[in-house]
Length: 213
Length: 259
Image 1: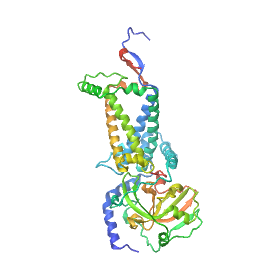
Image 2 (image 1 turned 90 degrees about the vertical axis):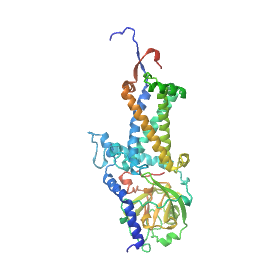
Image 3 (image 1 turned 120 degrees about the vertical axis):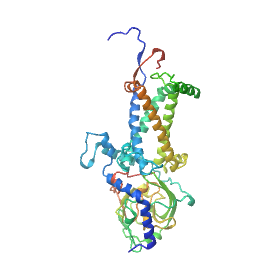
Image 4 (image 1 turned 180 degrees about the vertical axis):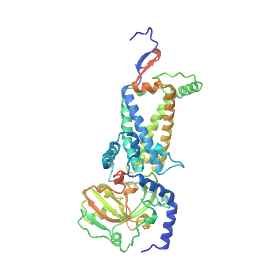
């Protein structure tokens, strides 16, 4: 170990352990929900297409539903742990706020002109908006999913979506939106691979000027 | 016993309509032995199967399904009614559903038919259609939700199962009410769902005597559960404390399947 004179950057924890754990559990839960959900969709397609067999989980409808109704607990409880931790520790407000339309507009234009600098551990306004939308889609998937699971026992919730048949369409639409987020998310990880390492170790090398606890 | 030409022609047309779905159905039944083929890809090179108990993932999914049975039993409110709809919202034509094509719909002569009653009941004498019609009748326009995801609104009427169970002196503290059907289908309900005011032994569909494709002469209609929990062509009803399972449940569908 040698001392580097005047280190330009220092290593800090940008993703706390709870965030990393819930992130990876969520990744597993979401993929189980998506692939089993596509198998369930295929049993009675809403639109004139079906999902390819290789992108489904469960083998047949009974298996797919067993996966979906097992993974839903993982998805919901893990999301709850993240939410409670994120709010109590102020991780959520610190990471994703403030968020304003003006900042999104400014950062979106900068990003399109390739002038937006990526800083590990610090999200620009476009990223903050993307995460906010992903959180809302997750909540919408959960709520519409509950309405589909229990359209009689939770008929008030189902009515909020316009009834069972509309809840199916909302559930599908929210899924499509979340898939859009995941595609974008994975594309950006490919562009900046150090983000993947940071989500595993939690640590990232950041410039002293831009550190953020 | 042969069908009248009108019924025969209608069922033939039904078969033509259903052709693509029947292909799907056959494919599904080929795969039903494996609860989770997808699980194999997750556990590649890690075969934990122990004979009929299946893979670790299979056993985990079964355990979760049993857990979901308990959660649903707890969520079930015996006084909460399924939403009802105006007659103008009834879907026609209403789909025929079974694990076999319409050609195999059992042919049952109403006059010869008798409903057998067994298990934890005081009076085991069989019932005729005439006797069932003499009991108080209940009519409902409710949504049938299929496990495949689609739903249709239909109208069923018949004897509330609770009324029937009371008449035969059933042990209402028993755990299950089971059904055996003329088409070798079978199923069972938890007692609270069996006693729900909208659970009926349906004799009529859409204001007419049940057509063969809708379960003639008798079917259960449980609007608080997925469609497969409402067996058709009922031959016998029994009350028991031993888990009776069901045709699809024994292959992996969740048993409670409340909605």
